[in-house]
Amino acid sequence: MTSKMASCIFCKIIKGEIPCFKLFESDKTLAFLDINPLSRGHALIIPKFHGEKLVDIPDEHLGEILPLAKKLVKATGATEYNILQNNGPTAHQVVPHVHFHMIPKPNQEEGLG
Ligand code: 5GP
Ligand code: ZN
Image (cartoon, helix red, strand yellow):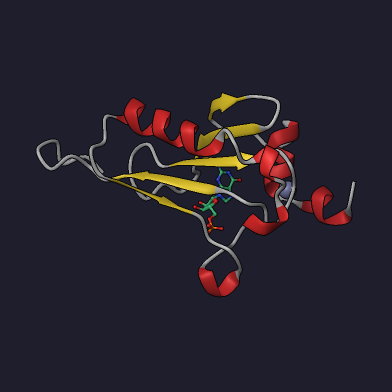
């Protein structure tokens, strides 16, 4: 294990050292609710392989992520949503472990955030 992994907050979540509200887990992928959600159902989907940016993650650790994002969108019932993945501080990445945001937009008629 590298020192970056040892101090990585998402690696600690993967290891169960920090709690999270888990939505899905497989041997390669984990999805959980964002601690500071931009909307109800805001989820993070991460490869269990530690890497800072998308190009650092081997393809075989990325394969479940978009299909899972689709499932989570459907589970929220959202019809409008953002899937975001930030790389580097100037691109608004704060946590240096690759993660995909799935951010549902509230349905207008429900007015839920
Ligand atoms: P970034 O700006 O790096 O793309 O987004 C990082 C996201 O991780 C933020 O939305 C932030 O709320 C979330 N986050 C940071 N620390 C934790 C944590 O300990 N638990 C959970 N569930 N989410 C976290
Ligand atoms: Zn990590």
